[in-house]
Length: 114
Length: 114
Image (tube, rainbow over the protein chains, first blue to last red):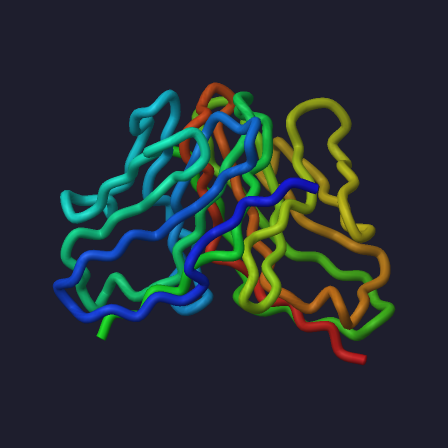
């Protein structure tokens, strides 16, 4: 069964540094998402992406965050200047076109900001 | 905006007993409802969904969920719990015409004791 893959599995960075989290969605999916989860608790929506542009973003997704689909397969989340409170698990997900399609999640990248 | 509530942080059941994990939702239109399970250090895995039709939907690993429009609920159930069912369970909702964000509940930790 096709999977969403995320790299790296764990990223440690210093406060103020830029990080890029990478994702390879399922190949025939058209919608892409980033979510984050702090301390194994609530899963928070960050952003959705379709047709090479952001469809919707939450209040969490401020100017420090950006997403990109640089080629036909990768989907990246960039945090320009990390803060301590950015420490979380970041999950990438993808889905088929229809709103009734479930999201397929990767195993996440654990970001630790020190 | 759509939202879900999972009123229980923790549910404990004995192996072999039936289990219920509760979820209520709020949407302005027709809801698409989903249940996901998360095992330690893994992404969320899709269990089942309600789109339309029969109010009782069956999913993976013997789980089922009952859609109740009057009570705006979508409780997850299993007739006989297994120790391996112990995990974090998330209810999620999406509006029927919204391909963008899927909103998740806060999660319920299910512990099945032998």
